[in-house]
Length: 133
Image (cartoon, rainbow, N blue to C red; front, side, top):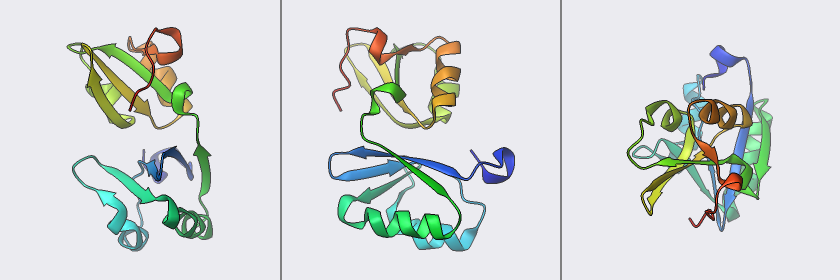
């Protein structure tokens, strides 16, 4: 999701234990440089330790971002069978993992959840699965 494509400067962060995650493409290189120490370029996600999150959130807010923090991630999680096509779903996810013949995704927005469901994914809340990260 790019700022220019969506005109949306909201970033949804997910609290997972002692780490906050978010996925976002920054058009401004200077802002990315300030945050690059938190960027995992293998997973394409920012991982911020809890003790540093306030600093990062303040920096984003100073740069006119609305930061939403989600602690109960279940509403943002979907699942598909492990071997189903998933490239489009993966593109809008913050995190993915495999378990018991299924692939699970933590989606970056509520819109992405709805899009994934329209592409054949099932909301975790509608299955027998627990999130189990």
